[in-house]
Amino acid sequence: MSENSYFENNHVTLIGTICDEPVFSHEIYGEKYYIVKLSVNRLSDNTDIIPLTISERFFGEYYPQVDDFVLVNGQYRSYNNYSGEGNKLILTVFVKEIFRYDEDYYADEYSKTNPNQIYLNGYICKAPSYRVTPYHREISDILLAVNRSYSKSDYIPCIAWGRNAKFAQTLAVGTNLKIWGRIQSREYQKHLSETETVLKTAYEVSISKMELIE
Image (cartoon, rainbow, N blue to C red; front, top):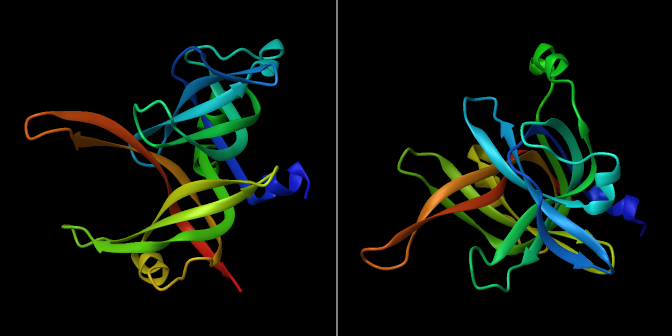
């Protein structure tokens, strides 16, 4: 299967503002990769801060600057964190395309443009966890394995709501799902001891639509 075929299984489009300067992340086969954070507005007044992984090969045409308004196309990928710090699973948007976007045009067309879109076609790799919040919202947590080239997979945590949540709890491990939604960031407090807590950020896909593949 070609790389383009895998891109069809895992596609992200984001429109937002660069938050910080690129920070070196790692090097593979002589190619350096950097992390940049992107602030993406929700349809509400909140924002999501989403990490991007970008290759140095983009820097000849475009170097990310703080406050640049950009459009990004890429894939949502997961990596194991062996540093012992932070979350065990690192989630990032692997950039395929990035360029400056016309902010005035975007403002005019805002009602027609979704700034945060993701499509995934993958397999449930852990039994969905169903719960009801204190505010009586139904939620199911789904861990989706999405195939990538070179026999690799990305493991993407997803959240289904309402009727989708109730439906998801009936699905077995190995079920093939297509989902549409958005990437969201969520801060939470982790208790290190009875007196010490640390603020952390979780990333997940909030599902707006799901389709079962028979």
